[in-house]
Figure 1 (tube, one colour):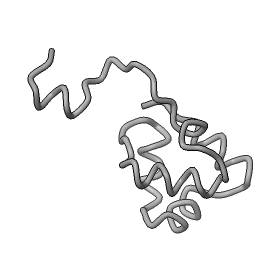
Figure 2: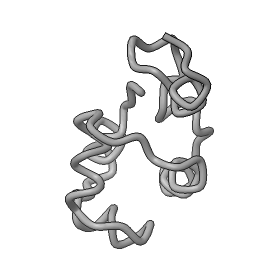
Figure 3: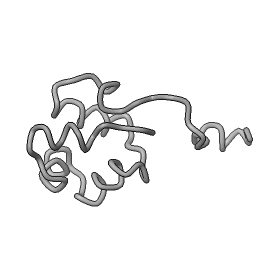
Length: 78
């Protein structure tokens, strides 16, 4: 999932560690989200968007992806 997390974070001057502390995850988790190695749960995405006072869709870009969703994988969709 594409995102603008790093841009939003830098605009308000937060480090990855500070943002992680605000939403209850590690700096490494924030880094993994920013580099698109990890997709946050909807609850974590919501908590992050609340830090920036904006809708989830402004931080996280829900668009078609080459990567299969968990639902597709569980249904065997190729």
